[in-house]
Length: 298
Image (spheres, one colour):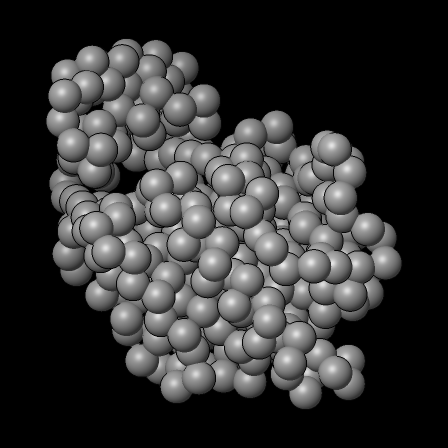
């Protein structure tokens, strides 16, 4: 693979520029498309991507709208349908041919499921496999930190962001600094340290708020069935307090052929805490995709 990935800008269907990175040979037999999580960017997958041992692959990663170097667009565009259409735009522009494995982390897994719902005909033809890491199909408000998504304070926050985004941006960053300082001696998975990282992140308060609202109503359960015809790996940390592993277990329970990888003691930050184990799970998936009849005849 080249020393550094090539950078591209893809126009979403509403014109928002999406910055993407492509690594590996143009004639690779298989492409892995990495989809990042909330308040992150494409680089969150770097630790896993650098550890992949599967030969002959090409990787594509991109910054979702409102994240990293990509554009933001209209505030009403922060829906899972739109994020899935953005993924489709990236696939059409950068992977026009050949089999693809979608690897989604946290929000990225939710976007991958939304893509499967909107494009069921591509599953088993273009999309040859899925890696769903520390993610959920819905029910985020049922437990863990997600139960606060429907707290009255959340509604107040969303209204305040819409009315005074600049003031709320300053408040977000100040709050992030305070939480980071107070959480220095707390465990890595403590709510205070995680909140500090999210608040101090460069992602705008508008993006942050609108997607939190989308998480509260997430429902991609119908999409799970579309994945039954392709190899799937579902991975999560057993100590994840933000998207508890029960969500991954539920997804895997509806996919008899899926491989469920429990990462002992890991929290929500599995891509950095347990990059080697996630890479191993993804390598195993890529081998299964190669051995599948779909790939042999595609």
